[in-house]
Image (cartoon, rainbow, N blue to C red; front, side):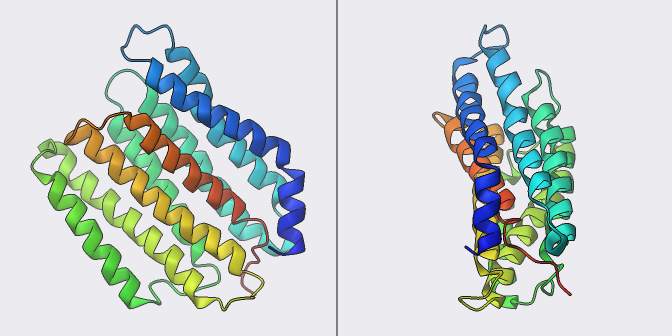
Length: 238
């Protein structure tokens, strides 16, 4: 990491520490809240969106003159994600509302990831992730309610495009380039996000995955932390 990245991490150390605490408690709260009447649901409700909001605060505190557009766009994505967290944790069926919020998150991230690199520059990476997206959708198709099929297809394609763009962008920077560390963080964030949402979808519509909250939220918070860290040391295109 460059000096800007190191300074940003130090300035936000206490926020990242609180984020880790909230993320762990959100997972624990989800595991303990086995039913709608569970006395532990409050812990999940309190900490799940709070963890994402803490990352939003960290990004806003870290935005510098050279990374304003990238940082603000990632912050917008985190704001939509916090709204999505809220909808997905509510009792009742607010899955579609959460899906729309996270779709907007991925659109914001794609916009950020194209500020200093061309969209779909690496055709091979995009072809690979398009194929992965098709396989994921095919595996879910028979289990999806008819009204959810089109929204899930749109979401899966946006998620795959975001992850592919993050990796394609990382590959465009040579080792040692000022933006390489930040680009690598975003690339890993895209991968973790894809794993998290795939597990979420299969756990909701197809399989009963043991300790699902551990895998879904663990990979989700890792992804969001990596995107937040990608704003440290990143510079907007000139």
